[in-house]
Amino acid sequence: MMKETPVAPKIQVHHLDFYYGTKQALMDITLDIMPAEIMAFIGPSGCGKSTFLRCLNRMNDEIPHTRVVGEILLDHEDIYAPAVDIVELRRRVGLVFQKPNPFPQSIYNNIVMGPRSLGLEKGSALGDAAKQLLQEVDLWDEIKGNMSLPALSLSLGQQQRLCIARTLAVRPEVILMDEPCSALDPIATLRVEDLMRELREQYTIVIVTHNMQQAARVSDRTALFWLGELIEEAPTAQLFTRPAQKMTEDYISGRVG
Image 1 (tube, rainbow, N blue to C red):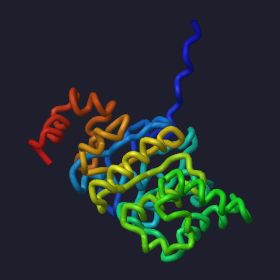
Image 2: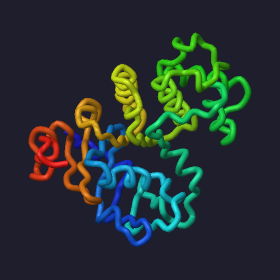
Image 3: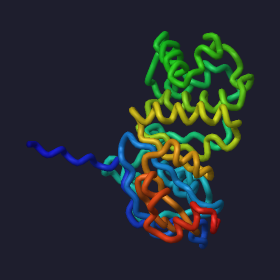
Image 4: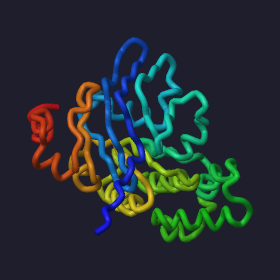
């Protein structure tokens, strides 16, 4: 009987430290993120979850006086190597923000701006791609196929799904989501969660959430951050029912945090 070939991690993080000026925000983080899975980061406010998420596509580079020590590999290549093309990295590793941030333009322009500027699609192919993406995020029927509608006329939940479609438009491999449902009502939240489960078949997804129930519902693996340290990482069901660390048990039971 042939042995199955082990699946290589999509992202590998080795001994990562991160600094805002002289303040150390992340301490010795080592973590693997596998392809076609949803990884959730949980922990109290200010524990480093979002900082770590933004390290994965170098969004923290936009903040003055920040510094990274350690290594992050995407498909075994160091994303902090001097020759890395930041634009290409952020195409491959997209980010969906906490609050929906559509451009104040039409739905169509929101989706095609990225692929048009990168030369991924041209002419009528842009419209076909936009329609397909709107169908993927369950917006096509809701807007009745009218892509000329202003993006800001959509509800918050619809705007967030549009932002996800905009991220998908540039053909990413990894989708980072920084509390993508925190501004949404429960029904809109469930729509986005359903969408995440569908997308995991094609993409690696990493989500930061304060909602432990959400992590339990949607993720394959969960990591607990605490004061800049990675306390524990495990399959989600295991972490929530049989945590290895007392700190994890105390946090998910509500005794701390």
